[in-house]
Image 1 (cartoon, one colour):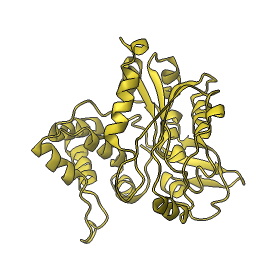
Image 2 (cartoon, rainbow, N blue to C red; image 1 turned 135 degrees about the vertical axis):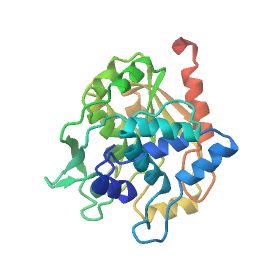
Image 3 (cartoon, rainbow, N blue to C red; image 1 turned 180 degrees about the horizontal axis):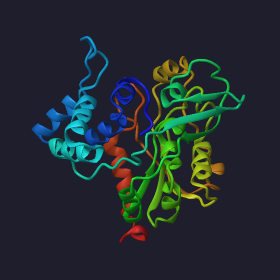
Image 4 (cartoon, one colour; image 1 turned 180 degrees about the vertical axis):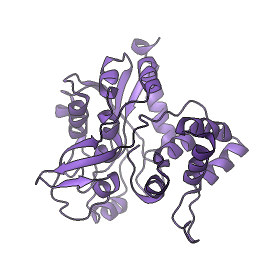
Length: 293
């Protein structure tokens, strides 16, 4: 809920609502696998490439913004959009606070805004020291109930500093995750990201999560892709300073209780997790007898 770039950022700045992009993506992921659900998913993902004021905007973001105006609040807008998409499950914003993601780099420089941090092009050799929210963000109460009742809490994949960790900065969220009896799972990123996770190995991500969760307790599981990457794709990513994340088993053994490896690479022109294979792996973990009930 700290997205400050692209269509979401423009709507946030111009309309004063929470940025809709992350909510839209969650709704699309849970949309019904029906003709209507598939059509609505395509509509929600449609981006205007022309038009004065429309170019660059995403239809789903615009619709969520209009629904917020019509219904009077973000939660009602999400509920109406959920019905339109026929989603399975429930989408909850972690906070309703208008907050900005801040970062301090290792050289002391401060950056303001998720998109500024995410898309920076200068001083990429300088890493991120820590991040925080300004002003302080307060949790949307139903999120705490959902965390308490969850069977599994999935952390990742995604940009560690600009997508995953910001959720843990919201007041009471980290504490609720620590107190939950749910199995805690980290899905390791496939590739590093310049300026954000340069040189990271699998354990590096887990250690950061533990730092921001504020506990020394290891996570329950680390899910790691063991499908080989096509050499031509690795070379293409390397040109952009993105490299495969190494599984450092010895270090991981001190921060996770169990490492689960599986062939999780999707086919296509980009290196992505296969959503079906990933979901199956998660469900196999959740359904293990020790976690049943």
